[in-house]
Length: 179
Image (cartoon, rainbow, N blue to C red; front, side, top):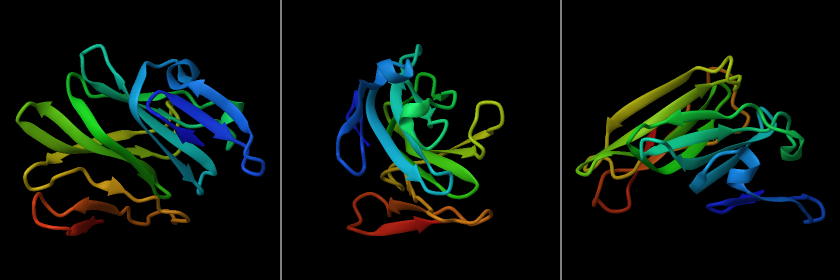
């Protein structure tokens, strides 16, 4: 599976034939505009997909999409949308462990203020049963970009979640691992 800013394409793993080629907005019924990010969750045996979309406040929202079963062609769980109001989320990424999916990004709330934002979406992921927690922490200059959440393949329930970030702005090539 691959995605560009506005389209998604699904291939047959064994033959490489295109199984689905569709505009994201048409496929999911959302006005998607940029930064699609797809991961394969081997724990749930399904893909998880996020993409930024504009909201009515002039900011961003993150639609959270996952197929009903491992096959993208067999329908999707109800779309969950996390709305950031008039704020703009950038560099959105998604990771997971056995307990939750984690979405991170740079949250621009004011022309001179930047925060790092993390969303934790508990499992099971459905509109009726998930709880969504949003954490906003200081960003620039102490933290140049939001952390990138790991894909914790094979993690057991209760296992920690790891994230990686650049260790500050302008201090070389250092990385910081966050647990």
